[in-house]
Length: 133
Image: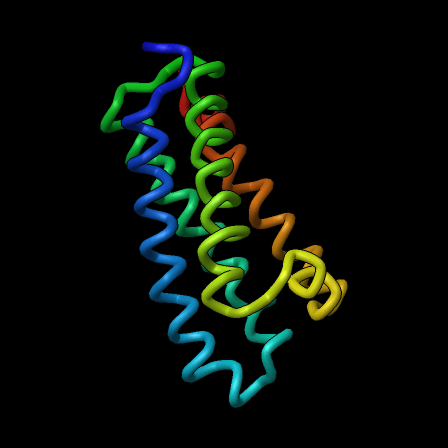
């Protein structure tokens, strides 16, 4: 396996991004009007962690990733892609600066978001460790 596993990382990123896009749409349209934006964001995080776990599991099996370093590289590269997209395209579409993005969020929601990102980036590595025989 190459040091930078592009196909697994792109696959992992794509799966999680697609699910996040769908869940985000449901959050904005259906959940946030009922419970508020901050609560809706916090409620979405556990679902995204589950999506990350399922996607990482699929990717490590599909690409036969059995070593810790390639698994970590997969997650870190996918996280880099997600952050790049989040802090460029998504902020532009929402009309926000990076400063506004951070200052307009409730600290608990921001902490939950960063925890979800950390788990997303580490999930392939975590699963390789758990499933390794």
